[in-house]
Image (cartoon, rainbow, N blue to C red; front, side):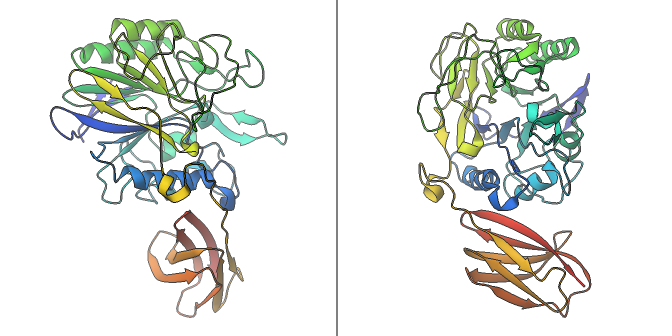
Length: 398
């Protein structure tokens, strides 16, 4: 893709399915590596399954967008959040990537674009479980994309990715988390971008809702959260300015998450249909860790938003939770033999630390012992791939 620099963000030319129309998939709130225990990282398993499903959609999506709270483990040892996340993206060893360098498919035909949420600013946790915020979001810019505000564009649309900021002090109580919002420079940049693409369909991707209202949970049940006004859990600085920019530039859709619910509203906070024709639609999508997503269809005349969808029903069932599975390797360090214990049928890959597969083994849920005599001393990786996800363990060969 061709890269052009404009002010402090980047513009890219995105591929089109056809000159007249294309689709993309919108998800939010992945929370991959929500726990430091990989055995219970079910969110990552949902994420991996969803990416595989999106690769089979018809029509094939041009790209996937993920609007914040990608992970929240911070830079806690040994790996931090994003090296763990990249196990589920192609290529798995990529660091310091450019925008659009991650793909949901090994053939590298469907890129995934990220924008940060409030969790991207977390770097660690205090003993009482309260996150410690660091405004540099260094892990995000190292492992996801160097730019936190950027644009992808093609002949009929412009898609703007914006950071809506870090946590700010509670306004309505401990369950209310506002983003810090937009700087004046961000607002000026956004105006310029939209003005340069005046005749195109306009889509904005960000984490915090610009306008909030009570919606439904991922399973369709009513959301019981009390939302006292349209600014609840939104962002603090330049919120009204942002809404005015959307109005004056005829933005079609603003896609976000944060609230872990599904709802579509207008500027006043009135609930409207997904494809309301009366102005900018502010679209919330429930959390990806609850398997929610939407398909967005863009043509020169309109941006069509699907109803909320659920991924991987054929794998997990409509309301089925992932049954935990575990993998262990011993002894570790190992000298001449290694035993791998996995609680489910799995394909086991033994690889070097840089990803070179040395041996592949099929396990039937039983302990498997392999010889290590031919391996040089060093650190190796065991990867268990099952119908319900993937787990990884490291071991040392002495």
